[in-house]
View 1: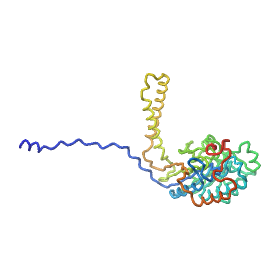
View 2: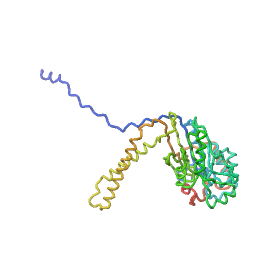
View 3: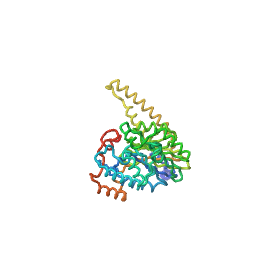
View 4: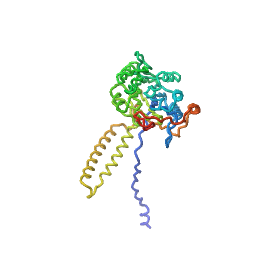
Amino acid sequence: MLALAAVGCRHPEAAPPVAPPVGPPAPPLPPARGKAIGLLYSSNLLGAFAPCACTLPLGGIARRATAIARARAEADAVLIVDAGDLFEPSGDTETDASDRERRARLVATATARGGLTAFTPGERDLALGLPLLRRLAAAANLPVVATNLYGPTGERLFDADRLVDAAGVKIGIFGVSAPPTPADADRWRAAGIVVREPADAAREAVRSLRARGATVVVALVHLGGPAESRRLVAAVEGIDWAVLGHSGLNLEVPEKVGAARMLEAMSEGKNLGRLDLHIVGGSLAFADRGERAEIAGILADHRRQLTEYDRPVGDTDPASLVEYRETRRRQLGQAIDRETALLARLPEAIPGSWFENRIVALAPGIPDEPGVAKLVQGYERGTTRPSGHPHRGAGHNGLAGGAGGHL
């Protein structure tokens, strides 16, 4: 019994502590909201007032109006800009003049209803004819800006720029249009349209806007392909954001050119670009909220690829394949080193002002805004040709009209 009592008095040995499971690192804290300014941007609508005849029907000016209303409810201020080719499909030879004007009036009225801060005409807009374009702009109160379009006696055809107050921030907006092609030069001259050199006009506009107090400058650039837009943005200091027209790019990540960033949301109104600027502490130096996640994703993919290349190739592989794999492993290692260093330099949490860019697909899940939907229905009832997607002509590069033809 004494032995049993002695055994019973012993304290059981404590179990070793169990380490808590290791989970993924906590996500960084969201940045401060600050003062939120939304810049909604588009270009290359080409008169496409209805959703496309696609497997997933995207677009439609009535859906666009709903997306704009949602952005207004979420931001302290919203600016809406368009970089041109708003009214006319490329090479449309099937629609008679009266229906072309009715379609243009529909687009102008719907655009004005959603709100428009600035619009720069492209060559398809000028193809309407200068008198009709001016009448449309006046009737719908569309603010047209074109810093390099002049009349034959040296007068400006439209205002050069706009300086607007967005939640206390002065934002300057100007636009440049491309010179006519050789085939169009005589017709433009006869119409009284003189196009001055875009880069010189852009520099003058930036100087003027900055001198009048603009702290953010937005350029609406309707030139040729992407290379021409990049050259102009690189050549003109003082541009913060450049919304492109004509080139048909879909820049989910804004493309950086010098100190500026370029934006574009493809064509035919399938998408609406939305840039949200969050001003924290008054700073106008913006960090990209999505940059860290993007680099981390690329780094993870490169590490995965390197693991694949680390596996033995086997004795049957030819020497050329072994050499290729070693070269590829070296390239991946260098990329991983760069991305790791870049990620280490980026703060885990954004301490100041930041931006977020999104390409909003105008998909069927976005309902039509009732007022604009009625405008579209009224147009379709009165048109003399089949309604719907109105593109049957050639795109900017001579390809068939449509999303692929605008590039």
